[in-house]
Structure formats: C-alpha cells, structure tokens
Amino acid sequence: MFYMAISPEDDKIHQKWHDTVLGKKTLSIRLWKGVKIVYEATAKGALQKVIVASSEDPQYKKRTKVSQIRKMVDAALNYRQSDQTPTEEKTYIYISNSKVIGCIVAESIDKAYRVVANNNQENNITPSISNSITCSKNQPQHAVLGISRIWIWKEVQRQGLATKLLDIVRNTFFFGDKVEKDLIAITQPSSEGYNFAVKYFGRKDFLVYLV
Image 1: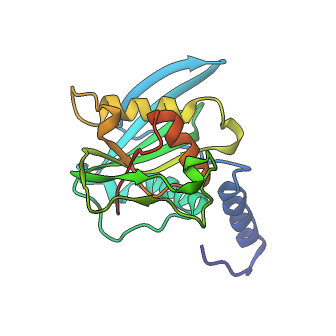
Image 2 (image 1 turned 90 degrees about the vertical axis):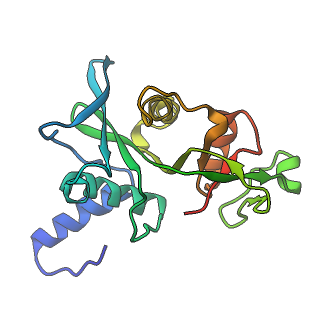
C-alpha cells in the first residue's frame, strides 16, 4: 500500500490499514443481497457465519469488500497475487458479529506434488521461511483442490478456526462432494503454515502446488 502523509485523515486511513495488516484490528463486512452462506452458528454469544464469493459470480472482482479483505490477507501473508484469476476460485470469509476473523482462498486444480523430507524434516525440525520446503516436481500427483491462502485474525488464532474453516471448504467447494484430504494441496507454506499442514493432513509429505 503506497502512503504519503498529506492530511490528518490520510494518517487515520493509513493507521487503520497498518493496524489491520499487523493483526491489531480486522475489517467489518455488511452482507450483500444474494450472498451465499455455507455455515451459520452461535458461539460464545457471537453470531458466526462463513460466506463464499465465487469467481463464477459476474460481480466477483467488483465486490469492494471482498477485494479489501483479500488485499488485507495478501498483505498479512506477504502473498503476491497473480494478475490472472483461476478458472474456478472461491473466497471463504469467516465472520463473527460482522467482523472478519478468517479467510481461505481456494481454487480448482488438477495436479500437485509431494513434499520431500530433507534432513531437518527427518529430524523433526520445522523448516524456516527462508529454508523453503522441496517437492518432487518430477512426480505429479492427482489433486482437485488448491488452497492458496489461509488467514486467521491474530486475536482468535489457536482456537481451531483454521481447521474448522478448511473443513467447511472441503465440504462445500464442489457441490455435493466432500474433498478427501489426499486430494488437497497448499501453496508453499511459511514455517507456521508447515506445522499446520502436517497436523491437518497427518503427514509430512503433504501436497503442494504452484501458482
């Protein structure tokens, strides 16, 4: 986000964005007419919902709030967005009392690659962000669901929300068909993402895919 201090209002806008990216604050969202809700429940007195915005929606790229949320997530994860939208992409947004507390961006894929254990992984040492994991690119595996981003607001992390939201994605991405874990791939993860993937998929040689 480019920033030049010109007025007090600019400072307020920049500080709000800065706090949001750092996880101190999150965005609010007002649901639009016809929005698809795939989960709804009350937890700890809060009304929680998961909504989906799909690339099949002609207004997908014009949904201002969805675009703002994706930009926030991309900045927080240091994710570089491709200029080309995948053929079938869905943005899942987890909402609690109108506040955005989680987001997963998923897409349809046809192949992925197994992570190859290096010495650190064999010795149960988590790879760092700089020490990226390697995969067997010469042995593509069949996969149908790619997870390009998983983001949970800092204030509600380590409460099982990432697992819960990913399960919702598995159950709803393809109509009437639950995706098995062995058919799901993620993009190159951070060290924290690696730990989550190992725990979620129950194996160190989980699938990754290229975007």
